[in-house]
Image 1 (cartoon, rainbow, N blue to C red):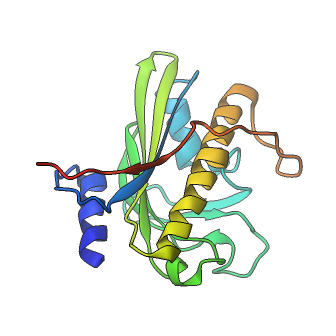
Image 2 (cartoon, rainbow, N blue to C red):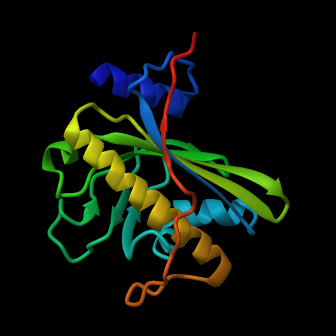
Length: 195
């Protein structure tokens, strides 16, 4: 499993081509928003931006190996606040960030592992940007299946729709969250082997 996670990390972070087996999969969610790349970049890479749509608290040190901690439960004890101790793997200004990620406390054996999230920013026009999130590095087995389903709902059903809402309507009110619809019908992709 370590080899598969490492290969997937290389694919996403370094762009190295690799052969995919039938079991490799990713969560992929792509949205286009009416905002320039620089604005979208700032929303994903600053504490002020992240706190306006992703989670009520965070700690971001925007450099490779810097912190990318997203605190969904900021008053919980350290280690239980959400994405504690996550690190940035790639920082390409206005183009791409990649960071480590963990599972929720409800999946403790998977939470002890790390997966990789990559967020890419591509201009559609001068005033619109396509933002594509990929979450990969999954293992095999029922607990990993539960984890990927959880994150399909989290990324596709909340984070990316919240990002779109933020761009269109302003910062989220964490006390009264808006009704959000999934960004796309399904977000889990099974990668196929290259022949």
